[in-house]
Length: 254
Image 1: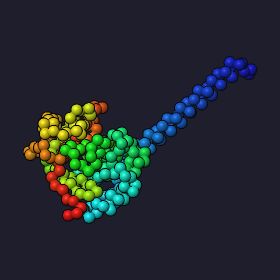
Image 2 (image 1 turned 30 degrees about the vertical axis):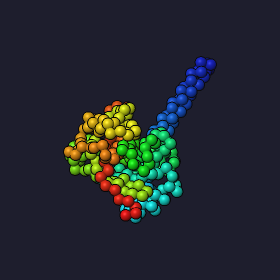
Image 3 (image 1 turned 180 degrees about the horizontal axis):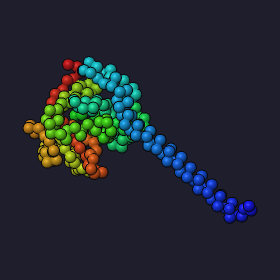
Image 4 (image 1 turned 90 degrees about the vertical axis):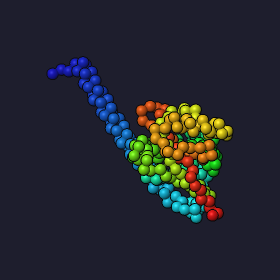
């Protein structure tokens, strides 16, 4: 049977379509593989990093100097270690040149989707400010600052109220005083300059207004306050904050 030019055009068209379909399938397969890998990294990277870092965590006043020496050899931006009891919050703290530097870098300065727990760049790294702010990503599996969510539950909040902040020369005991829901552009909660008693009273009043849960004993102007902030589900700019006050201090020379 004689084959016309139309036959070859049709056959070529089918080959082209099949080739494009195969290419599309391979692209989908590659994307699915990447998505699985990316999800695995997002889920497991923070846990693997914490397991790597935990050996550097100070255990008491006597171990502070050695622990922070090991950290600062690797990265001088490490300034503290934060632990909130009965949660997975148990990480070193860094302070960058701005509040963007450690959004996608781990404590060793390497690229990381989970970033680091970091102190607001405007705060004093010795935590002597009236109000200091720590920020961290809300990662899957309760990693980084995701466990702040646990304090949404009133029973969990009422039963768990302690934490510890380790510094190179001292240990600060923390009491969790409030759990807040707020906006990322809140003019009070994301400021660090609270010098006058009047401005401090205004901040404390604002914390009370934003509180979902709070303790009986209110914050006062002479407290040292530490806020832990992370993203909240529901809105792009929604944030959850855990408010702590310093209740005790143990110095390395004692």
